[in-house]
Length: 83
View 1: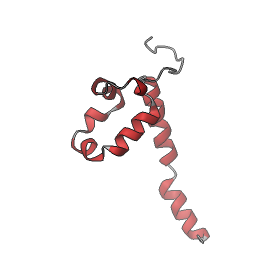
View 2: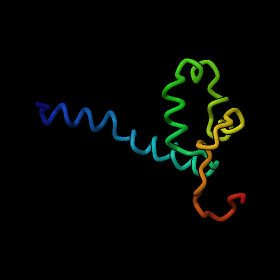
View 3: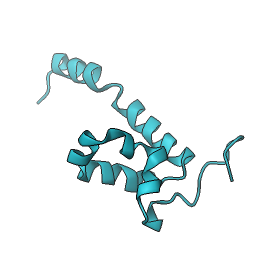
């Protein structure tokens, strides 16, 4: 069982995790990348991500991937987003 003091420490330490993932997901959507496929790929290729992080940025990711399942076919309808 977690004590209230431990809970406060955990909340303080991980309070921005949700914000981080929401930012990653939104950036993927803006770049027409399937967020689930992208997050799965970076989680399963950790050594390559560490060795070449710029190649794994969402706006570079589709250039190196040829899998059509990784394309987001339902991007957000935002002003200024290329068609």
